[in-house]
Image (cartoon, rainbow, N blue to C red; front, top):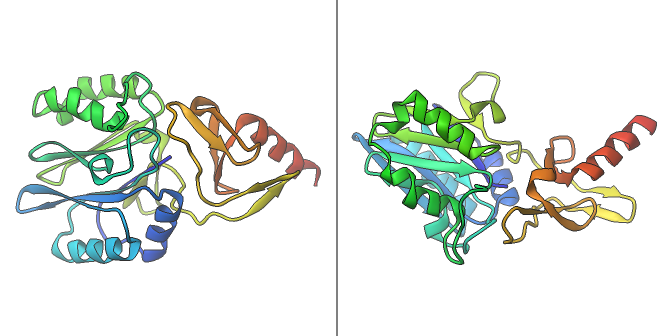
Amino acid sequence: MCIAILNTTGTLDLELFINCWDNNPDGAGIAYVINNEVVIQKEMDSVEDFYLNYCDIREQTELPMIVHFRVATSGIIDEANCHPFEVFPGLAVAHNGILNHIDPTPSSSDTRVFNEQILSRLPRDFMYNEGISQLLSVFLEDSKMVFIDKFGMFNIINEHLGHWDEKRLNWFSNYSYLQSQLYTFPNKTLFPLSKQNNMRQMEYCEGCDAYVDFAKMDYSRALGVSLCRNCFEWYDDYTIHH
């Protein structure tokens, strides 16, 4: 699933970081601006260390920054595949979703390949070009991307597919920053952590215990897990009659 967060100002709390890490456990990263440079830092082992580093950075700058927590749907689990990525000096990107028209390699994720083969070859000012943003939106389909440049300016592609908090200080690409809970379906247990496999366009449904086409999956804010549409229908019917 992954989650991309645009933290425009202020400090996010530790509980939110822990929830994001637990639900997206394959590495995390930050892209921030210092002295007109975009700096990217990544963490693979400790959410506590990641949060302390984030707090130190927040003491140095009030400019917007990108925070990302990864679930590996393609490519190996390592720092090189961890978001955010440098597009070129002065611009970084983070992604949430699956790029259906990009072929990952055994070692490189779809986002990493897309960044290296397409984004890095675009004009240096493409982030400010409305036409290119619209083309990216169509290409991404249900995915979301967040860019930040060396001036602290940002651009969210498919912003409407995520949501802002009440004060519009933080944008979230999904709800996996919320704490998951254990729920039981008939003969099935829903576990709090995502169990996605590494097959492209497939995601694990925790209701029916099977891998399902990613396009047929949805995230349940009420349950805090991803479910296929059949399980969603069962849950809706169950809540109506109980």
